[in-house]
Length: 197
Image 1 (cartoon, rainbow, N blue to C red):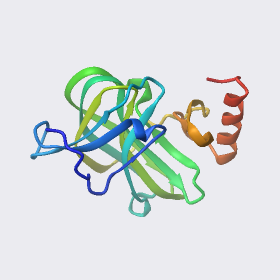
Image 2: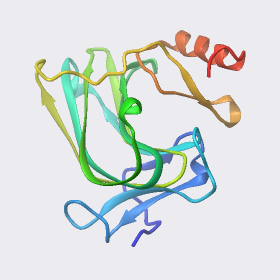
Image 3: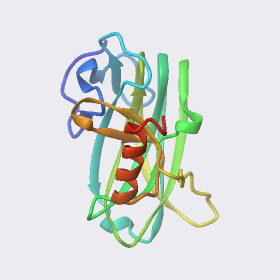
């Protein structure tokens, strides 16, 4: 049964958090006895989105290649995925992957998913979570981090910044990565001018 019980250490964020809720589900899980769940509670469609997320300091992973593994299950989801973002102390994105090119759609049973990113020496923080774009529900379980060697390829979305969504208060969500604050600004301006969608 899904509940709105606080998910300790996790926060609800994203472009439209008022349209979503997160909680703990004690009846649907992959391992253990509970899972985290994120689901829409209002009529939404792409590109509206929310994320269940948390973050930690990057210090112990600097100069290393980091692998995230987790189990996800979806129900009638427009798009759902796991994601990681590595930031500098200035707030610039250094590495990023949100599985946008391999997102989960529809109703899919438990599967294990992986993200692999390099954590540069100048990294300050690492943020990760579960993303739900549009309607539906996504369960998440058994998040694990491990250090891998260079034989394991990264999944870094090393692309030109593209603005996929704007929401209230001129906030923007960027699906592509490896961009500076100036590049973010230029991408946002192109979007607002109608040159990019």
